Amino acid sequence: MASVCLYLHAHQPWRIKNFSIFDIGGNHSYFDEQRNLAYLDRIAKKSYLPTNKILLDLIRETDGRFKVSFSISGTLLEQLEKYAPEVIKSFQDLVKTGRVELLAETYYHSLSYLYSKEEFKEQVNLHRNKFKKLFNYQPKVFRNTELMFSNEMAKFVQGMRYQGILAEGASHILGWRSPNFTYRVKTADKIRVLLRNFQLSDDISFRFSTRDWAEWPLTAEKFTNWVNQVNGNGEVVNLFMDYETFGEHQWEDTGIFDFLRAFPHKVLEHPDNDFKTPSEIIAAHQSAGELDFHCVTSWADTERDLSAWLGNSMQKKSLESIYALEKEILASGDQEMMEDWRKLQTSDHFYYMCTKWFADGDVHKYFNPYDSPYDCFISYMNIINDLKLRLEKKVEKIII
Image (cartoon, rainbow, N blue to C red; front, side):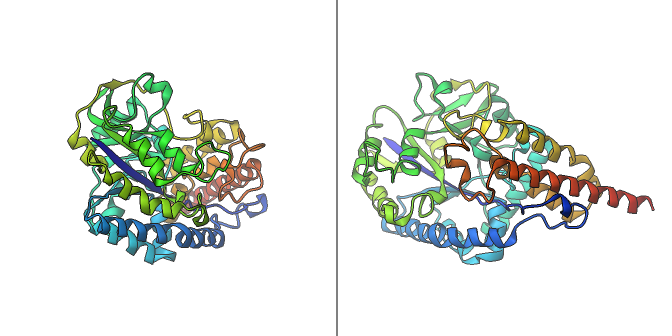
């Protein structure tokens, strides 16, 4: 039997303003409220609302045989609560069906694990509390920002008592093995790892509307045939992708919604297929062996590493600068500064500083408010300097 695990990740950052050197010391408003609202309104209408409706219809049409899993960042949930509560309601309606699993992650979609384990745990706790408040839900499975994963990370998350964790089915890690099984990793013998089948996932999320792709057009029948080939050669097909794939990355006129409506029905026509959530897969299947994630992997770009966020000196300087403020920020007790500090940790800010594909690619420009990575770096470091000034004034007031 081949179980399909469809997992969708929904996230939007609080994008920062073009913050000039003349704003330092006089303007503490870092985030572009108007731009963020415009992006959110567009995505909610084009992607979240229509996709949630289709998913709810599919659950009902299949009598609950269709299942889906989500992770939703805290930064997105905050924006939805403020600007689009109808989207929150649509997610709540899905969770109430009992056919949806929600996955834990860092509240601010941050790289905190790499810089501060304490901050990492705090953000996971904040995210858990938000899920409890909005969905009355306690996640059992974890996904780190951008599917970042390593042996050490698995051990740490296992210590936080999660049953499973998602990772990229990177070829340089798997070698001859298949992503269509569950695994253990070195140093973590209890937590189970579900690996993204990047070939099939990217066929939908990236190649679906590419007309020079040999397999275009991608139909539900064709894709289901590929899934069916896993029977006898694997136990699970993990389709992990950004939620915005549906309606935003792939617009409605590409036929992506028609594909989504038809695909689950086609999968379920085969008697050996079903849909399972990550925790159900863990419960149903034994580990197929042990993998060694000796270096950190991610689901980004062809390298499947951290170079999209740590590939140049600007990114490294920015990340080092924000986490260098941790002790002072937390000691200040200033809730507004702490919230700003955490919003500035969101990985998107550093992604916008990526230079490796800037000259000839669009992947790093999607919903990017900057004309160049250098503009983003300048604004970000100006904000860091303003945050330092706020800290200094806070300390001065305490001393006085």
